[in-house]
Figure 1: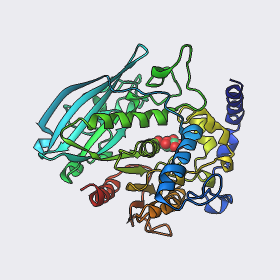
Figure 2: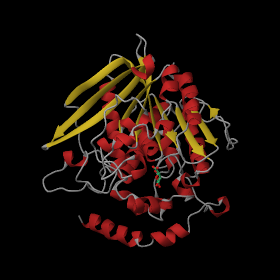
Figure 3: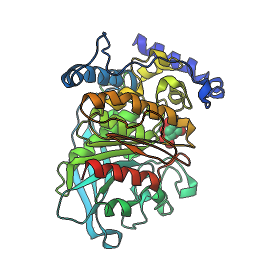
Length: 423
Ligand code: GTR
């Protein structure tokens, strides 16, 4: 309790510094401080990891535990899907190109009920298909102009320009993110798309009374403990539950599920891939701080800035590292290494300095020794590739021109990468 009170006060003290800190945001490579990165294959008590067995039995569990207790937070218990309700399915979606299926997963505990809506578009074939599983930001109806998509009734962050008013979406919100979701290209390439609104699992606000967190509270508890899950871990948990469902779906090859996410949902996809080895491939699109980018570089968004702007994303223990990155026992290349030997794609955008493209590249590079130990290629580039020149080993990377976004260009690379591993 004492420790928690201390962290609470500390967070207020540090929150007060944010403005000054913001003014110091590093956007110039020459300002990056010198730092010592923990080596992913050196044991915390000393000595080198030399075998696959030592990686999986010793080093990997220790790294995973540190990320769990110090960064994203522990899931406090187990909760299975209570009910699956299929709302509709059609073989004539997208002008006859695809199958569509819409269903809800219900979770129940402690007198709470949570409904998670799943939208699926699948190629029309008798074989089980590989799929991309990806959260969307404002509701399933935003990904396509398909009028059959059910409108979410969940809380959504206001955005009047796309008809989101009083935290509710409207008809006007349909297809508002369709540029990010080339559903036809995905399906024509032989992949399904499974998408879910992330706010169904936990609304993205600093409020732990809603979403999945209260399902696990002990009596009188109103907030996760200092080492327990923030929202990113809750969203990652939700992805694993969707995968539980996909394991029962006759149309999906659940051994070929690529989990993908953009930005905060890229951080989430990485943590889902790290914690759940059933995900066959992981894609981080511009996940930045707390995602693929190295924290110790302090380039763009820092630990302190992210903890202040989004106090609910990480566990409270992560506050200890505000403006104190060198004390982190891990850095984000070690998160990427937890995904080895499974295919991993990390992507940056030239105009997305906030997410530290170089820090994302270096992270992929420094995760590579684990892939190599496990007999895979890792990242096939020592230096950062030119803009729009993807490299693809078992780790893939590109930096594309343009701003922070999830674009058709990005998807084309993810499909090419998936073709190497999931076909
Ligand atoms: C930003 C945040 C980033 C990134 C982004 C997003 O405001 O600083 O870490 O997650 O939001 O998710 O769009």
